Image (cartoon, rainbow, N blue to C red):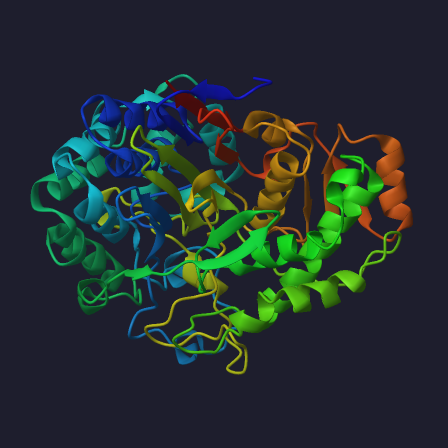
Length: 526
């Protein structure tokens, strides 16, 4: 699709068409954006299991029209009470996969409950119904899930409970064939009947922690029972008349505001889009914001994140002055996971939800918790075992989190909802999409379709490469390489760039929706 879907009343975007459709069904049944968002989120946990699961985390930005303000809900989990550096004695890092990588409590189900309880209109059972149906009766295996299964087959085969679901009969389900998750359907039915506490205090909690206990896992019944997410005030910045809203730490959201504050120092619209100067300014602005992100980001309950200084426009101006148009800086990147699913909903009343959820790596830990069908995240493996590191592992601590849904308001009302899958790529793709819409007048679909880049290491690649999609002219790539970037040309539409989606309210009041051609998603508006 070359142009955005345009709706006069409502818009839903997500990385899987079945999840987008599930949200639309909630609106048709009389639900609002919050009902639809929870239905989309739950459905993604079923039909996009390589990217998200009930065993993962989520972050939510909400706007309820009668309240007239943006709120955030941090549905990320903390490390277990028994989790400490001493738990990994003799190791230099927490394992990326397996039981040892399961360090933090899954926060997502709590997030569903919080958003639905606060704002939803439909019943809890109604919003979970599409997810239950697809888990029980199956859905056509998507190309993205198939390719990720092939890539991670060895990880999925290590645990019997995982292999039984994702490699049934020792085989990988082919694209278009029916993929079922009956154990997960039973769990979702219990949640529909008994609510949030079934997951954190009921039979599901006991089954998960019993399984982990038998395999020397860290999480206990007390860890799940004591879990709570938090309603928080989003952090803010401004860019060319828009107010930017991001989740506060432990999210990396402030890095995207910092990058836009730096870019605001330049007349970006006067620079040719897609030119050397465009890519150079964007990449260098982000690298500067990542330097401070890596220095400070962790759980603010354990460390001070100096947001007032980091988001100061004077500080941004000083950083902008250090950028050279024809010389790459030598910043280093962290190793971040990339499996995530972003979605957004706007309803007829103007209620808006921008949200994102994740398992960290593809298929997370690779461990399904006993007979629950729930794939558990490995988010806690990003904790450091260095006691002096800002993100060092401690009990009951949230880790540095890549998840960062975004919302921009104008005149106090939501104007742009946007976000993407992709770890280190999330601030980068958000910056690309937003500048393309605001500085160059592209609609959401055009902004998403344009060639993208991602600088830095994904979790399996120890390089400082600037990966750029193959549609970028060779002369631009050569110029970036001459400036000192380690340029690598990738596919024309490469999945490593993440799966981005956006909704923008245009000057007519219509809703423009864009969904990434790099995934199995869809935008539905009417």
